[in-house]
Length: 537
Image (cartoon, rainbow, N blue to C red; front, top):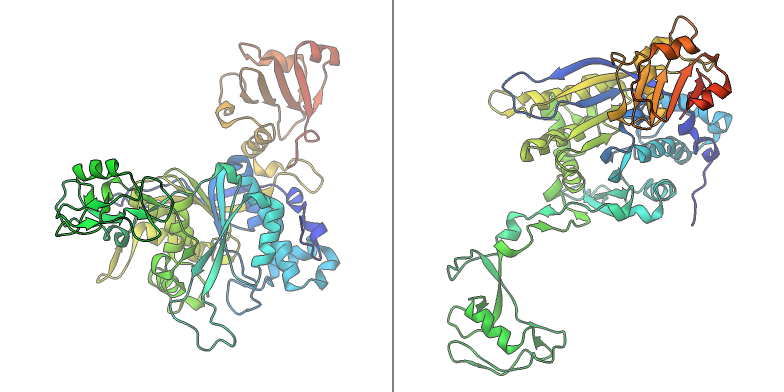
């Protein structure tokens, strides 16, 4: 399989392993006032480097995100607005210098973009559920590069399709070569064999094709051809219509779809339409009540269905009271576009992740779809830029509470979210545990690295021991850690725990072990030294 190579690739293909695990610090919780509609409240907005944020989400959300939608920088080379689309933001430059080193000074903007995207996509792949899918907005500048690295990370067999979004409603006559009227949305599944998009609801336009000229009690219907080009040996007979008209046979080159006996069975059930005067060529009545209520999604998304860039700018202006959307975002995405993604890729209780959150369109779309179908979808937004609080979170607050003027109010959608910032790393520069993050954060990390299922984990207030992390029928885990003193696995510690039914294996973390290896083996005990034996991921 062809692979994509660029300057700096060797420095970033495994960089997601080297990203320090940092705790997430909750700054506040926002919930709408009583009286607003019911909506999901266990949502998150995270301000900070999205690479570090994605790493910090792994313990709680690895393999649990049903739908990821991201709108990363398109790398157009344009500059001059807050959301820097040329990957020349000082934070990104600093990151490239630290990760890629001096080699990064010679990177083209395409090399920089690939270096930025690769480790983030690796972590997104880990967060995505086995039956989940990722949708990525992009344009011609990097679509081919994105396809290559997505094939490498997600696997070419898990490529689903490329959607064409008609983003403009009128041509740009000032364009030098062509009016660029579309963007792409690349769609990959975690496991394509396990993922099927939801069908789209039927539109009014599709349903309006069904009429009921004969007042059939089964409701509206539309006529379907009784003939087809496929050869059928019993499909060449003459027909006498109810009015007495003789029809010698099917149209030239065609065959009746059904044998003569079946035709008259359908006629007896009033499923054949002969025209208003009973002398027409027979047609099959296809009832709206009997057709599939879902429609297979198409890859061409016109602006009449999912909005265009001007719609998106108007949405931002209306919600945030800006005079010009360009003051903040040059290319926001319309709510209807992301809503289409969610309709195809989520269930009512799904988790949705957007790690390039921008103005918060994804959260708006999640809340709107929940309000429509009563769902409890949850969103996780990550925004690197400093406007995460003043724009991203502010938009979500207004969408939840309601916005607009007295003359044109927009009702709130309800709900709530927790706002986080990225805190200290779990390990210090000397590779010791960072006590500043707190015992709970450390316990949660160790439980994750041990693979303890959430339902098997326990709090420090459990009746067995404040050091018990979790247990199941086969294994118990203890994290014997005190920030201000060394701990030892000895007989005194063992006598202090009342575990009840003894599991086959007991794993105990401590600073040192004073028991003999023979005793440990005989009693199914496994010692892990703090911090040496705490796994890094």
